[in-house]
Image 1 (tube, helix red, strand yellow):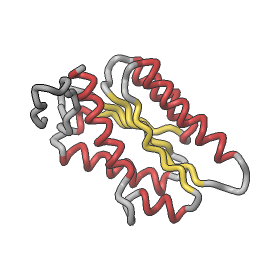
Image 2 (spheres, one colour; image 1 turned 180 degrees about the vertical axis):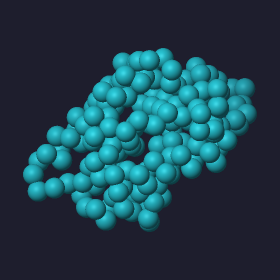
Image 3 (cartoon, rainbow, N blue to C red; image 1 turned 135 degrees about the vertical axis):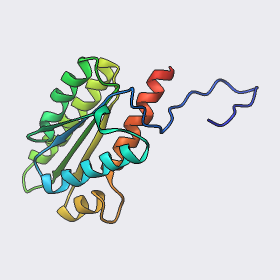
Length: 162
């Protein structure tokens, strides 16, 4: 961590080090699995590249993105996990169903983190087109699963330090 000059307030931040003594959970939506499996692969690859071992992760599959919050709440409430990473993909269709799923999923994941004090990371792609989803799952714009895992690791470490 960079040194804080003496005239500034204390600075606390999380580090990007996969601590194998700290368990993390990853919840993955099966709906649009052709995209979410790439998000999961990015998350798992990031975990191992940062020194994590498979035994410190739990992966849970749910039917769709709408089921991510309730599953995250169960995991976060168990006391066994220091962060829960939620991965999903919602692609806009011809009805307003997309808007309801996206809004409630985002709100639910946020609420779980606030209610439990366990960081719940929003790694859900909300895309207008399949092409956008493919690009954000590792094609052109990086892998959102990788970013979500990095956020989960950093937040778990930050919560430990606070």
